Each structure stands twice: as C-alpha cells, then as structure tokens.
Image (cartoon, rainbow, N blue to C red):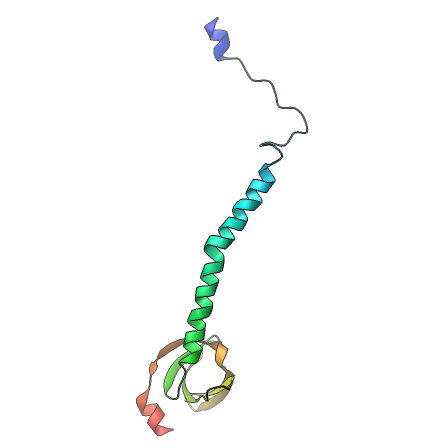
Length: 114
C-alpha cells in the first residue's frame, strides 16, 4: 500500500489557469519598481552630482578628457558661460562644459604659456 502512495500524483492543474495565481504579475512589477527605487535612481543622482562638480571645477590650465576621447588643456573658462575653449596639440576647440567627463590634473606650464 505504501508503494502506491509513493507513486501517487497530484491532480493536473486546471486548463487556462495562471501558474502562481492572478497576483503574480503584480508581484513582479512591484519587484521591478523596488529595484529601480533602491538601485538605479540613487546611482543616477550620484553620477549627476559628480558631473556637476567636474563642470564647476573647470579653470584655465586644467587637463581634461571629453566624452569624444579628446585630451586637452582648458584655455579659457568663464563662470556663468556654458562654453569653454580647450587646446589639444595645435588645435583650439570651443566645447560645451558638460562634455568634459574627467579632470586629468592641471598643467601649470601650459596655463602660463597661454
């Protein structure tokens, strides 16, 4: 008799029923929203603050890296203006402040030469 109980199967699920019940999609949506609120949104805020610090600290003689991969030295950067002038090798470029992604240091000799 116990051998028959070991091989007994449950009744098959009703056709057309959702596995996990009707609340499963709401649970998954809730998990996605929770993930966005806990992980993604704070990271975006932190990146935005860091970028604002980089843009605010631009001054003449600072070596920068742009999002296009150009390594250059800032020639002029006036407070309140959205554009700066950079110099890379023998080329001067006028760019927007927000394309600067990293400050590589300062070049005192380059700032004095300008």
